[in-house]
Amino acid sequence: MPTPRTSVAFDVDAVRAAFPALQQTVYDELPLIYLDNAATAQKPRVVLDRMAHYYAVENSNIHRGVHFLSQQATDAYEQARQTVARFINAAHTHEVIFTRGTTEAINLIASSYGKTQVSAGDELVVSALEHHSNLVPWQMLCEEVGATLRIIPIHDDGSLDLDAYRSLLSERTKLVAVNHISNALGTINPIAQIIADAHALEIPVLIDGAQAAPHAKIDVRALDADFYCFSSHKMFGPTGIGVLYGKEAWLNALPPYQGGGDMIEQVSFERSTYDSLPHKFEAGTPHIAGGLGLAAAIDFMESLGHDAIEAHEREVLAYATERIGNIEGVRLIGTAPQKASVVSFLVGDIHPYDAGTILDRLGIAVRTGHHCAQPLMDRLGIPGTVRASFALYNTRNDVDALADGILKVKQLFA
Amino acid sequence: MATPSIAERAQDVVEEFALFDDWMGKYEYLIDLGKDVPAIDDSFKTPDYRIHGCQSQVWLRAEEQDGRVYFFADSDALITKGLISLLVRVFTGQPASDIATAQLEFLDKIGLQDHLSATRKNGLAAMVKRMKQYALLFSATVRN
Ligand SMILES: Cc1ncc(COP(=O)(O)O)c(C=O)c1O
Image 1 (cartoon, rainbow over the protein chains, first blue to last red):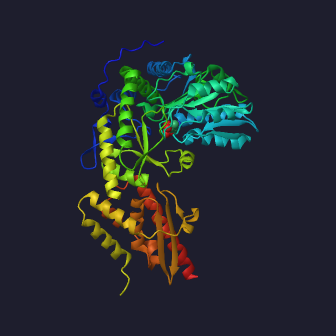
Image 2: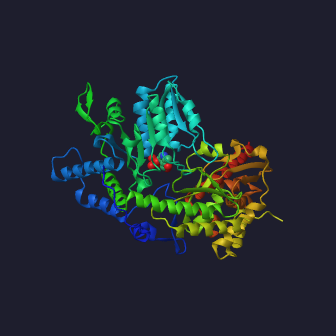
Image 3: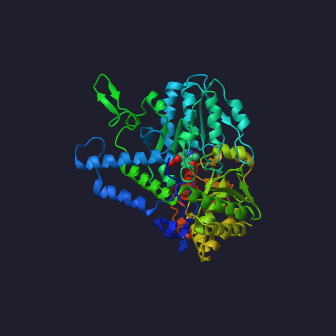
């Protein structure tokens, strides 16, 4: 058990000061209001410095050199793995597989689990809230092996229909794959319940935690998740690296994903034997600097304290929901009781793209469109939304700027 | 009176936008232009006429008469609609061969170039490409 931190007051100004990108202006000297955190988060100085230090001083390949630098880099990279393992409370450090991101982590399981555990007539269950990353790999697998994808429907507020979910589970179900937090609507899904229900029928569960890692405390053991995936770049770390957590027993049972260096034990022209976990799933030279940057990002978040981050974000979200929701003509999309850091909305019948273009010109970075969740937008009967997504460095000020921007948008398109 | 050339019409557009000295005015004008574009018939809002590469939905169709090409376009977003209305205005009724070879620097001169995001620029590029494809198609049929 990590020791609970005594919560120091959350000083958001000090937090903002740690992020160089937040200090800039855009267009004609407009302060940047960055509300596209669900797409990717900004990086604190400590992450940038950690990566620069690696390239400047420690650069060398890992797991293969006898020399000083290689040993040092290997140690640092494996230390980063331990940091991740602690962050998600994994039972073993080797249950943490570094990938390029959430997308690759899911594709890894779709390949290694899919090819060995899923066959014609089987079913996979995903939800109507999934990002394309947690949908398309399963569609491809289903097409390849002749399995069927079943979709957990949502209620109008954007929460999952759990009764419908339970009725989808059967002896044919080979995997449940759902997101922890929806990127498009911010719904926090009851994944502990979802996992427990699936496990009652001995069905393993993969959680797409891409949107949870920057906001929520993740405890893969308490959740009893079989697989849990997330991306470094959404949690203040570098792009190009992410994590697949898998239970040891599963990872040992599954075949490798890619072949190459670093993942083998013995190679001859007749056959090769694979290295043990975690290396079996990590072919080739990894994103070493990325791993170190990710660990620095985790250290940064933990130095602020999860409870303090969550309390701050809850407050900003509550304020935004009220402030934006009360603007005449604004329709909030996604009003589930449990939500995190996302306000998705439409302004009258103004196209999200029109609204986003004007907001952008006011220095406010939001995302517009379907948010890589086209089937969800179809289900809601809308072309897309404007999405403001908050991170630990956002403030009520940012919300006020957004609200003012929306008024400008209304005025322009009136 | 002779039809103004593509270059002449493009120059007109540049001059109109020069009347606004701030981005708000330019956008307001663009949005108004978008509102004035006659909607195309829903029967043409099909995948065949849809242009991909735009964040909003854009449909474009063309007709040819006596070697000249006439364009009809629509979008569900007003800013996009304003932008295509500029293209349509410059191109419509021009000889197919002129359209196919036209240079379109005027888009960079209306003072919105900083503000047209990369995705929008790609969308614009896709619209121009489709218009030129129509022109090429028609100039081929005219020659035959
Ligand atoms: C819920 C969810 N899943 C998966 C992804 C894909 O993450 P990445 O592009 O980092 O692989 C995202 C990011 O957009 C996401 O929000």
